[in-house]
Image: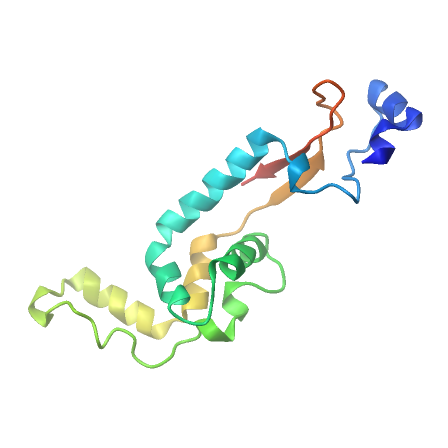
Length: 155
């Protein structure tokens, strides 16, 4: 962050010529509150839409921290993600021990069961995560009392 306060940087900011690169020593405390809110909402929406898949993943040797990383990697199209986790591959018939009596199985539930049997949890989570971008940028164009922030666009 020290370079932010250098006269050359301040001059570039005043002239609208700063490049918006994020300084190497920024951390989560430098993320603007609006961006944190946007990120939290984005993640909460995904978690709500994939609650059953995530709970199935957590029942294995897979935790929320890795799931969060994989959400980012998968959504942004990185070379790793949910689809790449061996622990999320099919392991037997997870739906055979269901507590739903057979006479209560609807066609939709049967189709869901067959789909879940056919695809790995990782593949299903990958589809749920979708594709988009999470783009950080340094808030050199937005200052609050000359305090820089890191902003994110998320879609």
